[in-house]
Image (tube, rainbow, N blue to C red; front, top):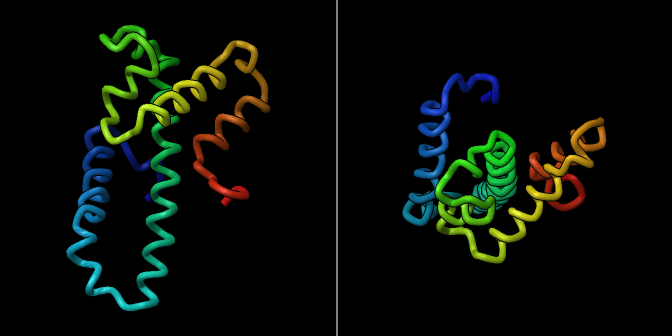
Length: 130
């Protein structure tokens, strides 16, 4: 589905929850997959993991830019992410917070270089831009 198709947060949450549900059920349904399917599904799951990590950055960055983090009880990007991502290890929370801080700095505020850099991080390209 196209990203532009999402009109409101509730629809996006429902779609992401459905995808999460499929992955939760994978241990039960994996026995139904053929050998070739295992390889294909693993590649798709790997891509989902990469774009999910990038989505964390995108959402945290947007929340910081809008002032949502500052106005929250959390107060910092690090704590805001930690409060909302209970499965994320503390080290990874720190890496994410540092990326948001560095990519949301006024020095990078304008110009195509900043947009390309934020876009690359937000795309979750993985190794070699994949």
